[in-house]
Length: 412
Image (cartoon, rainbow, N blue to C red; front, side, top):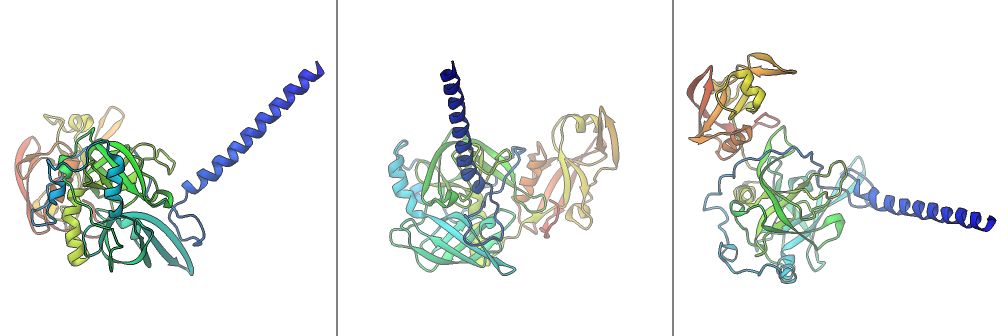
């Protein structure tokens, strides 16, 4: 009996020891994954560059295609091009990896130097490289590491926080490194295969495979409530350090720039990642190369999509449109005569805004929700006119707004 009891106690002790060892091992792996980009000692592990994101994205329509004179689609990525056969992932990696780089940034503040890591991809033979704005923001020094380990110092050519895109440049490409062809994100569909290559957790040259799990997402840009439209959602593993790297189709064409992950509270991949659509890259990046900045158009309204309670409180005929809650003083919206809410009405347990205009069309195209309106605004240039059809007090009216450049920290 005593021997059995001794054996039982010994077995329990072994289990406890194993559990404790496992907990220590998990903590050693988990803690670095929680690190945020901050000013820390340069000897610390490379911190997180991909921000966390709450899973509250709303679908938006396809972004307006780039003008044909901006970075034309390379023939190698044109629709119908044979490219690389699906399933030939080894060949895809060999072809694409030389066009992907790891990006190291160094930030000094208060006498302390911090280091961060991201990714990027080569745009042209002149040494331009596309990455995320949040990767290089506030960096005093940027270093690029090519696929073969060769390092080169890079200069920041242009940044745009609103689209979270940036362009850096090296003096010369490493031997064998080459630009990647740009695809057409308008052609991307749910269920398409998607490949991410980048520098997750500073493990350069890492490749992951998944599918396009959604298109037309709206993700926060991190700038005063503005959103990036038509983002691509994927379950290909994207982790801290993948920011700025390419999301690719199986023919090796770039379909997006990996930017954010929805983590549910952690900083590790949870199967929901987001990439900035490559057609937005086509539109913004050539301007960043030319002038260093990009000017977005501004209307100056705040609001929400017409849902059931908005419809009921405002006696709207349909559950569709962009409800305007606030018109910013001095904005193009105010000059155009748009109206915001005049009060609230109780609907069940909710105090619902009433009296605001409802935008139902923009430039003749139906507006189903507020994201549609933001997309219509983003498709224009400052100085252009946006023709709006609105509902006001049961009447259908036509309003024209002359868009101006987007002020810093302004509302949409």
